Each structure stands twice: as C-alpha cells, then as structure tokens.
Image (tube, rainbow, N blue to C red; front, side, top):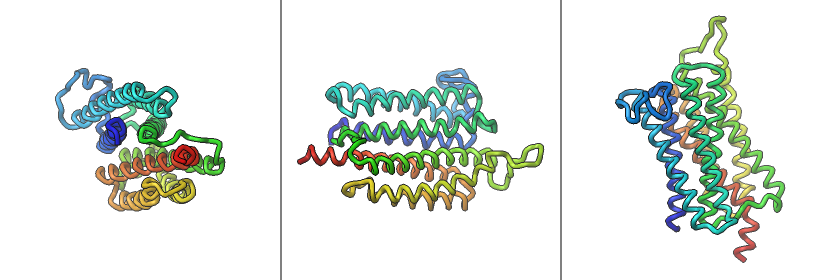
Length: 297
C-alpha cells in the first residue's frame, strides 16, 4: 500500500472522528459554546476552554484540521494521478463536500440553531448537514478505493445491480437523516420528557422518533440483500456489511434501553458511519467489477 493510499484512508478515518466529536457537541448541548461567533469562538481565536466552550472549540479545531487534510489530499492526488483518473474526481468531490460542511456548520452557528433551539429550521438543518457528511465520507472512501487500484464506476454493464445500489444508498441516506432527527429529539427532550407545547400536544420532533426504527428495519433488509447480490467476489467490505447492519440494529436497541447515553450515541453513530463506508465500497466493487476483471485478464 503506497503512502498516498494510506494517507487517503487516514483522512477518511480522521473525518469520522470529527463527526463523532460533533455528535458529542450535539448530545451535550454544547453547540452554543462559542456563541453566535464563527470562525472565531466567543470572538477570540483561542477562548478560555471550559465546559461547553471547550467541547465546541475542540470540534471546530478538528474540523479545521480536517479541512486542511482534505485539501492536501486533493493537491497530492492532482499531482500524482494522471489526467482522467477517477481518484481525481473523488478528491475534488471530497473538497466540495468538506467546504459544504464548513458552510452548513457556519450557518447553523450564526443562525443559533443550537443548544435548546427547537425550531423547524434546526430540524431541517440537522439532516441536511448529515446528508452532506455522508457525501463527504463517500467521496473520501471512493478516492481511497481508486488510489488503491479500484476500477472506475461502470453504470451501463449491470443495470439491475445499479438500481439496487441506488435503492440501498437512498435507503441508508434516508435512515441516517431520520436518525439525525431522532438524535436531536433525544437531546432536546430526554427520556421522561414529552416535549409538550402550550396546546398540550407532543412536539413534532418527539412524534418523529417512531420513523427511525421503522426505516432502520427496512434498510437493513436492503443492505443485507445488496451485500450478497451487489458484489462479484467477497471483498472484506462485503463480508463486513451484514455484520455492521446487525451491530447497528443491536446498538439501536441498546441505545433506547439505556436511555440514550452520550457514549452509546457515539457508538451508534460510529457504526452508522462504518456501515455507510462499507456500503459505498461494496457498491463501487459491484459497479466496477466487470471492468476490473477485463483489465486484470
């Protein structure tokens, strides 16, 4: 494995760490730790690091490092990969996605859709941010895959596999977005609180909690099917995919049973990110396997 390939995987893992720290920020209600100030924190480059401010500042610092790492990856790929190489496309998409992460994060902070805010705008921004995060992880995973010798995607050789890959991907994105909304509801309205309004009705976020487990069960069936059908040859990602699906379902049940503690939310999200990356790699192998076979022969 070349140093560039190792670096690409490192950038992917580092971004997963940043995502998990972001989950800690949300779960602990520390999103307002830096106030409505961006990119500075409390109007300072390095604020006094205590409580929520320390947690939010740590996330911002790691996000800044991730931004530098991704743009460094782009520069290295552009320098070492020949014109027309698919890794160039993956690296460029990674740069666009992480720029989107920064802009969405800035908008959330400046609009103060953080801490105890229960607005519809925040409920929309959270899954939007999550979808962009998935795009970032997918782009980074594909870049590493292509740098390691994976073939470019072929959307014409197997239309049935393509349809199932798209269906499974959309299902995972939808379930992840609903999970983000559920996690927000768990933060704003902890177990034992109904999230009632003046009219005595439950807050819409608490009513949406039921959507996530239903979608999770449905998406699990699709992911299991694709892991068996979509991959020609059993790659490590294909073998890992059904295991991750099962682990996700178990961790989801434990999360609810334990009263959604912060550490369990982080574990659940880590498994979700691993599942998404594995699915992207299995899909890339499925859609590029025939071309790869021709090149190898």
